[in-house]
Image 1 (tube, helix red, strand yellow):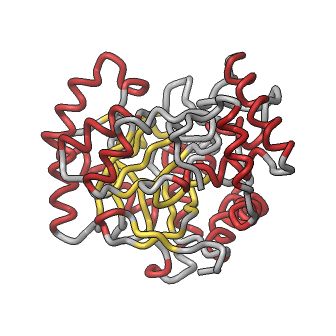
Image 2 (tube, helix red, strand yellow):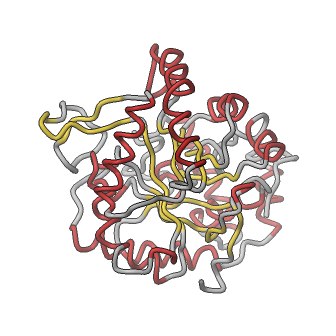
Length: 337
């Protein structure tokens, strides 16, 4: 591992990971079809740069992200990386996916939400086949939140705790996986799961960033109390904190509303005054909280990986955080690096 990517332990799991992880959503052709060789090379570049955590999901590109991860990672020793994937959907290869998928490309297989005991095991088995491995290190319940489940949330929460959770708990007890958790976009649901089950790690996307911190009041203190390791995704809020307030920027995977654009402009102005790119400040900020173990960052070409690693190694002056707080863009008690 390179000196710029020090290891951190994921809570009580005892699993050491690089402070930056590699997130697989973009490799599922999230916003547009990717060159296959470049996508696979990005995973290899992450490994070469000292990144040891690789997180993907069957949902990303309807299996394509896992397939690309498997192609790249089987070229390196299995013990040289930590592999994370998710359950909650299995895929029917005989059915074409319906119009309106979040992914512009990917496989045509149709997803089936299933948080039952058998459904989780079926999804896990499919993932092992796509990844080309016989085990994963971290297995997460995926997308059990209001945004994805709507009026079915309570039904599926009960199904998951009575079914999929028991399956993951068994896999952990049998040593097939080392840690279990959830991967969600809502901090309040992470807190609910933290109270409902015995989870080692959680992946929270988008809800603790330089732009917004809804996880700060309840979930992150609870994670510290229960020693749950936090893998933080969405530190750029789907891109706007990387690109700035520009027309092509995404916020939560869609076009940003005016109030978000204005807040990003103000953050960017403070960063410019300190000669710090907004993306660098957004990358450093979450690591100031003691519950955060690693940042899961997506990339679609090798140069993106290298830029992320370089941004983490570059300094951010303490005066920048003071100025952001003085302008009311962060609360006075919000921890900073």
